[in-house]
Every structure is written in structure tokens, then in C-alpha cells.
Image (cartoon, rainbow, N blue to C red):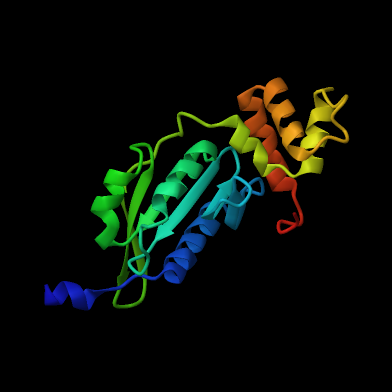
Length: 199
């Protein structure tokens, strides 16, 4: 037990995040079609996933270090399940058992440990799978009003909606754009977006 404690120290969010960014940056260094962003807001800011990788899917990474609690996780699970194509939760050893019970079986689970050289070691506990049930009404809320209206124009469905509030435009998109096409257009728009913190 003493040897184990000496080898591994308590994980922190910032250490896991830096290690994750390093891994993802290396993995997608030759792919200009991939966007990696911190704190992607979902459902109009009801939750923010720690890191999102956007390319042919939206893969969210949620970090729960040993310094974190799981108090917010049930609400995060509900929101992430509506929007993200894939989800991986990265956590410290102390949370593994509870997270395996709390999260859907298609969520990936990785354990993060920090060695005595302050290197984060990630190990896969459960392989992730594709989200089986995306909610188009939640997904389309990733689009800003002008972006949603432009997409309506692509489908020739903007008539009567140019001056409508964004929720009406979102609902119109859901009605006239098939889910797989909607997922493609949302990802494409997120990758094209320049000013991420605009409202």
C-alpha cells in the first residue's frame, strides 16, 4: 500500500486536461478537419463538456479528477446523452466504481493516475460506443440564430421564419432536415465558426 501511494499522487483537473490535450493534439495533428475545443456549451449553457473533439462526430470528454465530486454528473449525463455522438469520462481511481454504475454502458471510461514523475497515465476501463439516441431538438441548439437561419435557406425552408425567434427556427430545422443531415451540418458549422464566445 505504501509503495502504491508513493508511486501515484492525487489527480487534478488541470493535469488531466493538459495530458488529454497533448494526446488529442498528437492524434489529430495531420487532420485539419478536426476541431478541439474546451468547455463546449450544450443546451443553451445548461452544461459544458470539458473537451470536445469535432470531426466526423462530436466526441465529448468529461473530466472527474480525484479532487472533484460527482454531484453534477446525473444532470451532465442527461444533457450529454441528447447531443454527443461519443462520450468518454476520465476519472480518478476513487470514482471508478460509482461512475461505471451511473453512466450508460456506451460511455467510455478511462482511469487517470499521476505517477511520481507527475505524468498522467490513462488506462481504458470501458470502451465507448456510439450514442444510440441523439435528440435533434437539443442538437440543433448548438447553432446560433443566424447559422440556423442560413441552414434553413439551404433547404429552401426559410419562408415565414426570417424574423422568427431562434427557437422557432430550430424547430423548423428539426421538422425539415433529417437527423443524419442535421448532425453533419451542425458539425460543419461548429468547425467553421470563428468567434466561439459570441452569443
